[in-house]
Image 1 (cartoon, one colour):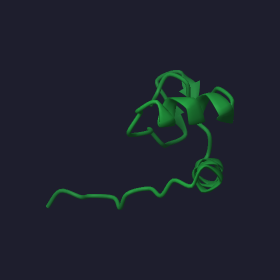
Image 2 (cartoon, one colour):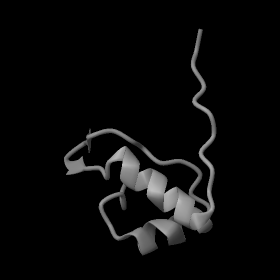
Image 3 (cartoon, helix red, strand yellow):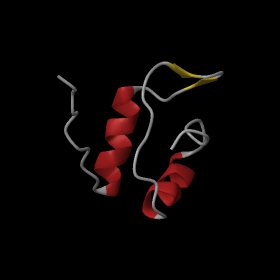
Length: 58
């Protein structure tokens, strides 16, 4: 989920429950600011979602 990251939490929740399976994190994505990691974590907790562990390539 990239395009609606700066929208309200309710819209992000609708996107996630409609099937979005990932979000982009970081300070800025293209030209728009992203919510900070603490905000994302709070949203996930309110929605009862648990982020998957980060996978790294070796």
